[in-house]
Amino acid sequence: MPDAYQQLLDDLVAEQQYLDAQLADTPDDDWQRDTPCRGWMVRDVIAHLAEVDDNAAAVASGATTRMDGGVRSADGTRSALQDSSRHMTRLQLVDWWRAARQRLQDALRPLDARTRLPWAGPPMSARSFATARLMECWSHGLDALDGAGVDPIHSDRLQHIAHLGYITRQFAYQTRGLEPNDELLRVELTLPSGAAWLRGEPDAASVIRGSAPDFCRVVTQRIHYKDTELGYTPGAAEEFLQVAQAFAGPPGEGRAQLR
Image (cartoon, rainbow, N blue to C red; front, top):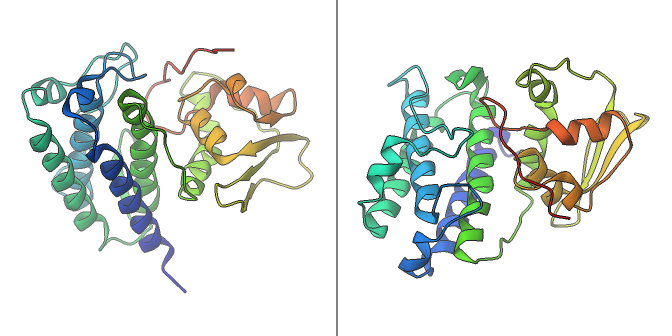
């Protein structure tokens, strides 16, 4: 049976390569276009991924014991390194990102999936650490592709992001200073392949149903839950969709409802 942790790392690489390939034929001018991530152009998104992958590689290799920059603030402020990267050519920027990705893989591959690593918040297992990098690549990738005018193609790699969104339910409340809702929650999703992805007790009164892309966009705050086709019971299920946040750090600003 394939090692689940190594398969996760394979999926991380596949997601990074997918985004890289989707942007490869985008004209240079389109890399200067604005994205839904306020204050960021397409190139700023890739610079962010490169910067954080570099830092993640340093953490995973033991070269540093803390996250160092790269966090998006609520008002969309770019990091100093992102600003300086605007002087890079497109090729220099992509080369930086590819090298950072390789350093991250080299650091993560030898680790045990249970190894605890420091990050923005409590330490997390290497498995969760890698899942978070996949989640960031996918969610920021949505912003970059939107800015570049490219329609995203979703894969069953979303199961990792759905899992992260589900298990961070309590965190989503706590980061807002709210008391977590302990009511049992069932999530029933359909992956892009048509396969079912299920979490929670089958007899839970609170249920969220729909597509994995919709759920993953909500938990990464790339869409307002009312702008999706998700179905949900009133009460705890809808309350979770209102606060969901699969990424570490302070509460995100989310996306405004469009319809």
